[in-house]
Amino acid sequence: MQTRRDAAILWLFLILPVGYMVAFVGYPVVYNLVMSVQDVTLGNLATWDRPFVGLGNYVELIANERFRLVVRNSVIFVTVNVVLQIAFGLAIALYFENRFPGARYMRGLFLAAWMLPPLVIGALWKWMYAADYGLINYVLESIGLSDGPIYWLSNPDIVLAAVIAANIWFGTPFIMLLLSAGIANIPRELYEAASLDGAGAIQRFRFVTLPMLKATLLAVACLATVYTMRAFDLIWALSQGGPIDASNVLPLYSYQLSFEQFRFGGGSAVATFSFVVVFIVALLYVRTIRHEKAM
Amino acid sequence: MSATAPSEGFGLRGSTLTLIGIALVGLYLFPVYWMYISAFKTSSEIFADPPTMFPENGTLSSFVWIFTQEHVGRYLRNSLIIAVSTMALTIVLGSLGAYAMSRIRSRAVDVALVTVVVLQTFPEALLATPMFVIFRELGLLNTHLAVVLATTTKTLGFALVFLRPIFAQVPFALEEAAFIDGASRLQSFRLVVFPMVRVGVLVVAALTFVMAYGEFVYPLTLLTRAELQPAPVGIYQFVGAEYADWHRVMAFASVFVTPVLLIFLLLQRRIVSGLTSGALK
Image (cartoon, rainbow over all chains, first blue to last red; front, side, top):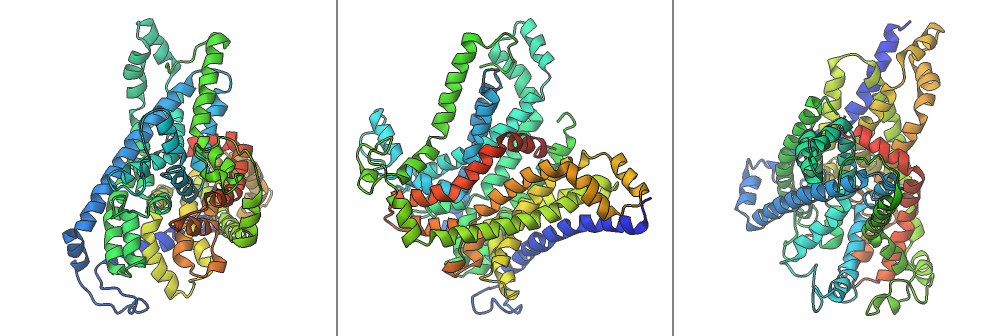
């Protein structure tokens, strides 16, 4: 029989991990909010008694051209990543949904890229992007797509695209896997019925796969957004956000303000902007998977 | 491209699809191959123009160099300490929580799960600022403990989400029998439930290990003493310079990621099915 003490233990089991997350994430988030309205320097870091500056840090940020560039870069970085990861992920998932020897095993192998530490991926792509001896310039030159080295990481006009491409390579396999699971849940009969009605492959994709995948796509887009908004290691290794902030995004900028310029209040204010966006997307994600009974 | 599964035998169409499939995977994972072969090139071959697709004078000198000149052994040991400790803490807290979530019938479980999922999404590089200040106040800067506590926030939410369906599969009737025999909740968890979820827990443990093993932001922020730094920080310092010895960087990276790739190859099927079942439920 289940005693009262046993029930109490069960609640303790639940409270331990949830309490941990509240203590080590919830508290820092709140602490961050507090710091974002204070003037925090290396000198007063150790005390609670820091000058209150109201929205000063935020006002300063919004007036700052650098911050506006970083926001613009972040929007581009996240949007292009989410759209292309889903597009490539869907294409790969559909290809390996065909039945042929080794299909499932090969589909799984893509995940090897996603398992690598992002910092290592940044280092590896930095080597491949090397202007004079790098693999990418060599391939582009030998197939005639470029003549002469392209300075992927030192040309401010293309560095953001270079960083985005590396992150797409990293993120796509996981997105592909989630989409595969969604596709596998579509009842086969729908395709058979569509075929009987004379629908070709493209029509079956448009009128069966896409509509049936709508909820999965929304959930996956939310997850991809959340994951892309936390990208740090890969960009830090590739370009450190440079040159002249051309590939700088919110997490890097916040980190630089805090730990390179020791403007902790500014770093916290930048973080708040991201937190609000991430929080909204996370709630949307939870809502989507809650309302999706078919999955 | 068709999303339907043809019912006919594999035949010519099957072999063609397989060949294209192999080409796609090979192309996609070519950077990983590039990392490994770069590590075996000599310092002159690494800058050969055009680059060689396979090392002509393969050498282990880069590996010898990084272990004798660059403290790679120390970096790897620190990574292992952080990864194993994070994995242990995550699996203990995650298993207890997932078990409780599968047994308590209350709306509180829903609230708890949503709380964890939402908290888990906050980007770590943005939590680094308050984490640094908080751990400084606690006097835990420059300890592996601080990195483990911080990294667990990243792995615990993930573990709970993926362990919950695994624990939910254990029928309550089995435990009831144990309770009638006089077992306590703790005994039932240890003797009845845990043996049944071992494999699932192993997969989540492996993924947790991989996440913590590659952790970069928290050690970068919370550790300033070089002798405590894990491998990603070491690799970063190696690459950060204007000029990098790429054959040596790739040797360091290869040594560092090989355990991750081995874990992946050994558990591939289970990792794939585990990930697809957890994330969208």
